[in-house]
Length: 160
Image 1: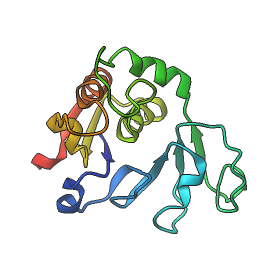
Image 2 (image 1 turned 90 degrees about the vertical axis):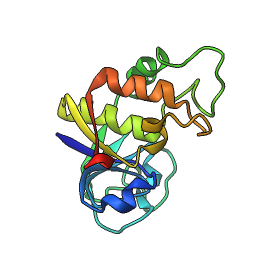
Image 3 (image 1 turned 30 degrees about the horizontal axis):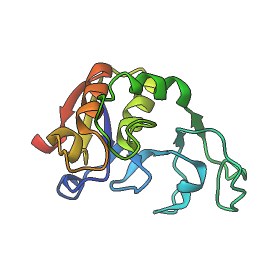
């Protein structure tokens, strides 16, 4: 089982290392998932392997591992494939930030786990808005949860 940390409040109580963390680095992890290369610099200074949703990068920031060789392993996801996959779960007539264009970073992390590690089960922590179906969240939690559950069996690590 791969464990993935989003940025929700449940990460604080969990407090254990995970396999993949998103760009806010809410928990220590083996891999870091970012949408763009320049987001890598946020947080800690350790050189984690990077799972990168969008491979295009022209930021030329000195700290970007895509623009400048920083000795970091980078796995480039096929964002076009995954954006198309996510689109089938977007609910018609629902307007959420970014829901018509792209999944949240947490959902991207699940897609990365499937893409890179070919997993069929993930443990999720910090995915509170998705797992609780919080309709006040800026993304569409129903579409996100349906997408994730279509890919893998989900273990809610808040219950452990």
